[in-house]
Length: 106
Image (cartoon, rainbow, N blue to C red):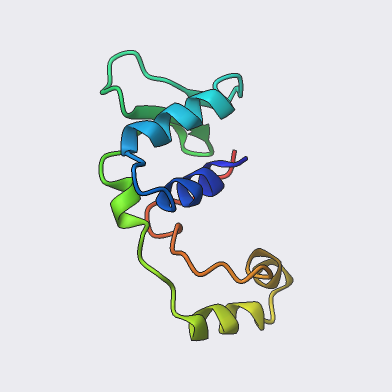
């Protein structure tokens, strides 16, 4: 399960915390070469290696920020996009805004 899917999944659990999100990320991606746990950061932190190099993230308030619902009309427009890529991303009709915090592809 990818980073964005894990963020979305954690938003559905009432007792989920930013720490539980990072714990799930660690379990799922700790062996991935582009995912790291910084030694010097807070317990709710992790690092990703991508085109910008190593980027450290602190997950404080991520779940709270990702609970905003996306308007059904906006999703409908995205599903009818002229771009094959956008239509494919939104084909399942996801109504949660997990893009509001970060867009990361491992």
